[in-house]
Length: 196
Image (cartoon, rainbow, N blue to C red; front, side, top):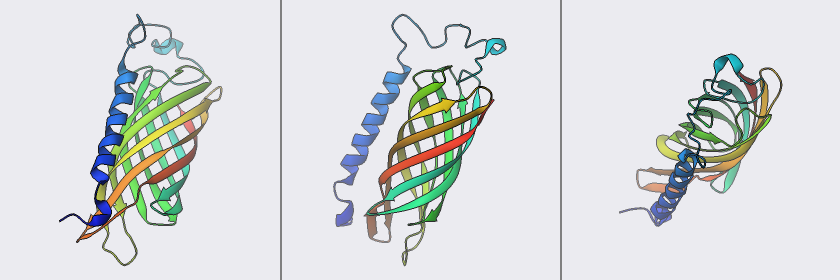
């Protein structure tokens, strides 16, 4: 029998996953009359822009996160990488270590869709899935699946440095030995790093 705390949560997870799937489908749809893979000056490695992302660019960054964890909150430090598979979308992976608040250590992989590749200011939306190592007080630790959604903006400098801010929501549910509770919450992240 499912613990009463988690009753009805499956519907919320399906809703979040449906919204994430819709965002992904919209991001993959080519613009009117243009395919993402059409050759242009941004695709040509010899003419790569001095600012912003384009196909083949890799970003590495360090992050500070404020995370709502259920009814509590905490701070985390972490890092992420992103490799642009196309001009508008890239593969992203991240991991964060809690430094205060509840012990939730997320590690995710997903995709990020960019609105303005090759530009100084680049808004994006991302979705990722993965696992979180959860270690609540007086309860056994467990590794649980999670879903992460982000919306943010990156500011690129001339050269290799960038600043990035994003916010979103992490869906995490703990259920072990008949005990279950929700550790989902809002996450706000600031990042800095370099791209090459």
